[in-house]
Structure formats: C-alpha cells, structure tokens
Image (cartoon, rainbow over all chains, first blue to last red; front, side):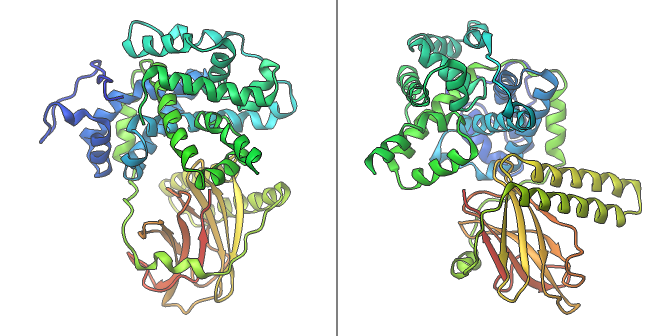
Length: 201
Length: 252
C-alpha cells in the first residue's frame, strides 16, 4: 500500500525532526511508534484510522460498537508496534489483520451464546457492500474492478467471509453450497484478486 | 496423506480472511509451520485482504482521533524482543498439557472471577483504587470470557501448580499460582519470555500466603512466548536472576 496517500483531513503540525517524503512510509512510522514517538502515531492514525474504522464497521455495522473496537485496534497498534516484523508482511496488512480479528472476535463472542443454536440469517445486502464504498478513489476502483472479475460465487464467498465476518462453514450454509466448494471459491477468488491487484509478496 | 495435505492447503484463503473456527485455525497453523509454500501463499492472500480493508475506509467519527491519541498517551508499550540467557531454560521441563473440557474451564473461570473481585475489593482503600481495580477486573474477566480462552496447568519444578487461562486473540493470559511458601525475603515473579530471548516482568506473586494473591494479567502474549516464574528478592527484579521454577510455553 505504498501508494496510499495520507488523509488530508487533519493535517499535522510537523514535529521536531520530522521531514517530508519517505517519513510517511507506514513501516517506518511503525518503527518510530515502537520507540514511543507520538507524532509518528498521529501519522499512523491519519493514514489508517479510516480503513480500521471502515473495516470494523463493515463487520459490526453498529457505529458505536465499531468506534469502540477501532479504538482498541489503534491502541493495540500503539502498544505492540515493536512486534511488527516488516520481513513478514506489510504494515497495512499487519494493522488490518489486527482490526479484522478484533472485529470478528466481537461478532463471534456476541453470537456465541445465541446464534450457535439458531439458523444463520442471510445478509441480503452483502453483495452490494463493496459497491457502496466506491467513491472515486483509485484504490477502491481497482478493488471493485478486480472483484468484478470474480465469479459471483467467488465474490459472494469472499465478501461474506471478510466483510461479513463469517466462517467458511457459515458461508457455505448461507449460500447453500458444500463446504469444499466454499473453501475452494474463497481461495480461488482471493488468488484472482491478488493477481488482478498486482499484489506482490 | 497427500489428500489431507492438499485439503489443508485449500484453507489458505479462509485462513487469510480469518474465516476459520478456533480449532480449524490452530490445526491449520500447525500445518503452516511445516508448509513453506502455504506460508508464502498466506502472506500474499493476507496482503490481498488488506487491500479489501483499505477499500472499506470511511471517515472515523469526530472525536475518535483525540480519544485514540489520548489513550496512547497513557498506555505502556510492549518492548521489542531482545536477548536473554534464560531463553532456553524452559525447553527441558517435562510439564504436561491437558486438554480441558468446557465445563472445567467454566468452573475455573467462575472461581477466578470470584477471586479477582473479592481480592481486589478487599484491598481497596480509595475510590481511585476502586476504579483501577474495576478496570483490572474487567480486563481479566474479558480474557476469561474470550471465545478462544483455554486453560493450561503446569507443575513447578519444586512443587506447586500454575494455571493460566490464555486468549491468543487478545494476546493475554490470566495466571494464578499455588506455589510453595517462600522465605519472607523472596517472591515469585512472573515473566513473559519471548522466543528471541527477552523477558518482561508481569508482576509478583506473593511468596507467602500462597493461593491468596490476585491473578496476574499478562498482556502482549504471542505464540512462541513462554510464561515463566522465577524466585526473586522481595520487590522483584528488572530481569530474571534465577532459573525459572515454572515454564509454560504459549503455543498457537
């Protein structure tokens, strides 16, 4: 995500020692955060609070709960930045993994008591989820374009699993297809997205 | 064998999207550990998932920025991995792991939760302490109630028993110890020891009145870390100075 631009919404006063350019690289910022640099944490916030909050909200839906979980995620980023290992993945992937896991933890712990015995409720609007997000941003257009290249079963499976926070067996139940099929569609769909988006890792 | 392997490999996508149950996830992570090509594929698919996340960005609510920055101001950070001579200490211990039924876990959880509340409340004298105790007891309860909470017990090399309820999703463990009584000048100290060899103090477990100390909450606990208890001078030390009497590996 080296091409992600920092949000211009809340420009920061440059702190001491802050220079332009590569300083906004997320991995570099996280290394500074790990050393207790609050200015770097602000810069991380400005780049990633939108994606963190957006992703959590997509999974949880409820705005108040989403903010609470997004706050937990950002605090975890602050506290565990020293554990980020650039050799094992990108900074954005590291943060988004934390965000997604926290969100589904919340979903699954809430559902644990009640939903386990109940039938899953299909999410009728799930297929539209990505469309509603696409507002001119190049990254989003790219993602949408790539999602378009998937078969509908691949797209639905990826959508429900990631944005819906469902396990693949729940996805299978929602879509009424065998487990093995969903497993394969999720993997094939992601591989196709990866290649379409030119993700190199 | 090759069929199973092939089957497991198909889960890379679901794993990258966190779409596995806890059990499946743990099983798949064991598979990952010996499948470099799966690991490689998972990395690429995780990066792909991150793009999906970035595409979901929406402006956060007003006020969230100030709250997030303020929270960081008052939160201690976890240190980086470092070197520590005790890193290898745990690997020879013959502790046993036991799978525990949900019922047993519930019993422990209820007991621990009651102990937490009782002990914390019993030791309070000011409302500020009360607030802190409530916060601490909430955190401990959250670990105990985590969907992936699991319990492990390990006997000490010199007797006693340490029990931990761990939630790897929360990166936290609640640890209680029933250890042999120590002389007044010594205490038990709990550490999170990383695979890289650093040791971070979690806190002290009273060396006397064993069983009556509140549970300790260890955070920043990652797979590959170990929870260790050493005997230290009263007041504790910055680094372990003795060989741990208990070591409990944290496995994925």
